[in-house]
Image (cartoon, rainbow, N blue to C red; front, top):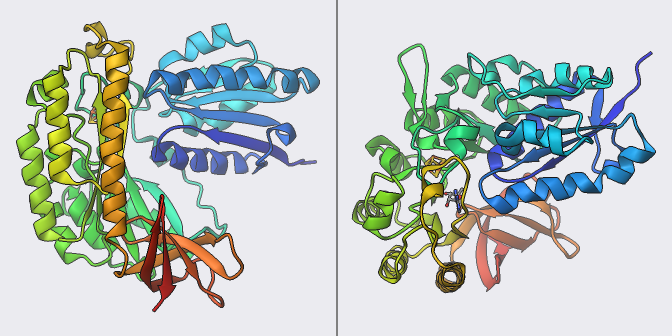
Length: 439
Ligand code: 5AD
Ligand code: SF4
């Protein structure tokens, strides 16, 4: 007799974790599990964790503490930690938190069913090994369930760049690209299940070089081939590194209509001195030239980025250089973080900037980025954009979707439904969203 068990997954961190959580859910479907949004109903709770900054990692321990009462009530509830904290601190988690039944790293989750089975037999199971081959090769599940109109598709994983502040090369491992035919197959499968927009994911997605019958494909080649799929209307990709922005990828932005006018291209700092200390191997000037070329290829492209302030030894002058670079780029969207020491990274050995100074710099940077984001958004008013409806709006007959430039747009659209791709004239700009009318 088979009974359905319930799986609750909580996802932290980046979009790649969102994708991994979906795949873990599918892997456990094969074991008779179905998803639940409520941890109180769950037979298995998985935290898919993020290790990028200290705060992200701390959250895991406080969240685990919250499940203590639940586990006391229902001893057969199993609790697992997955993702990058599992990779970096798996054994410590097992020691510190007797509640945890299983630990699975981001490169091992295809073995989740076996780990779960061991946990059911009362063992505590840990697997943070890196597989010999691409873990995705082990994930043969091809679920048939209908999907919403947008999906993530991981095409590349890991990083060989070793920025001095970053844990990714250690938690996710070396750069691996998925073979092109597998990516195409998964994309076609998603489209058959209702997906119209795919965001290709990778820690260094523009370094993609997936094996194919006619030699390795670049990201630009992959995008061109994906654009041939009928029913797939929009393609995005993230995250990119300035050094891997090849000529063919830049050209693709001017040539492929389905490739959306949005580029997330982190630079981290505007000071060459700091960029060097970060081991970034590009300069502020080379980044600015790259942005210029992107805008020549696709004049309406919206540029997004990431910044770290308070990196060890950052001076007032270094920070002013960052502000100047931001002024020059004019970002439509940006993420900025205070430097967080990550054990095991080269920068962890270096002298910290006074935290009060770092806080003040972060506030100044964020105020500037907010002004830019508002200005870019305000300029959309009066323009015509595509919008793919993703969910209902606040009012009757209203739908919300993302514009080509990834702005959230509220539209009165009676008679339309989620999954429709429509042309919209933008009529108003509010904090973090736009309003528009159907054309
Ligand atoms: N401290 C602060 N921010 C960091 N990031 C990566 N590592 C750190 C760190 N140690 C930021 C970078 C990166 C983004 C995903 O997270 O800006 O682009
Ligand atoms: Fe981390 Fe740098 Fe690699 Fe990005 S490029 S994942 S910041 S090491």
